[in-house]
Every structure is written in C-alpha cells, then in structure tokens.
Length: 128
Image 1 (cartoon, rainbow, N blue to C red):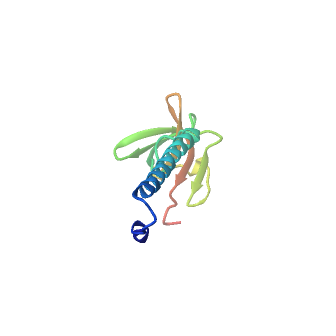
Image 2: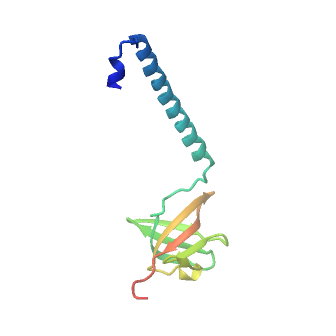
Image 3: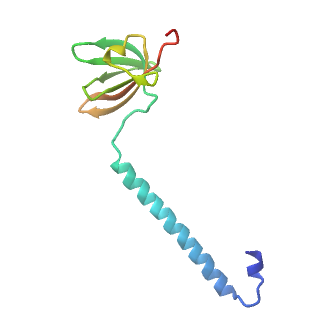
C-alpha cells in the first residue's frame, strides 16, 4: 500500500475513492452480519437457562413427573415429558437415573409457568 501512495500516476482523489469503497464494503459486511445474527437468533428455539442450569436434585415427584434441583441456593422445578432426553455420562439414560443427590444439567423451555426439561444431563458417579 505504501508503494501505491507514492506512485506518480495516481491522484489523491483516486486514493480517497479506494478508501471510500473499502469503508463501504466493511459497512456492508457489518450490516449483513448483523442481519444474519438477528434472523438466525429469531429462528432458533427459545431456550431459557443454560447448559450449566440444574444443580443438585433435592426432590423428585413420581406422580407429577417433576424434579427440583438447587443451584447457588436457588431451587428450580422441572417437568419431565415423553420427549425429554436423559444422558448419563455420555450414554442414554432414563427418568429413573434422576435421583435425589444427583448432579444434573438441564436444558429447558417454558410452557406457561412451568419449566419443561428437554435434555437432562446426569453426572455419572465416580464410584461406578
């Protein structure tokens, strides 16, 4: 670029035009990236919480198919459905693997006022 600035055949106006076109190209790129980010975010399912949600299971209600997990002193109750996936140490699990005292991570969505568990990751016990 430095050699181009000192070439005798290129005027200062030509160099400014090049800078404007580069700047416009960057603005166009940022605008496109922002549009893509907004459109892809609106198309994604609305998950609440994070993969680190959950905590330690403190209660389990067999009849209602719910469990309560406490994390950082805050209790959250999750509803389990037939579509809920359970994963124990990377392998397929089941509702029976959710036990009081188990460490869980929950991916969930809201249905009305309930948190419905989509994926429940259960940390495998080190003694097994």
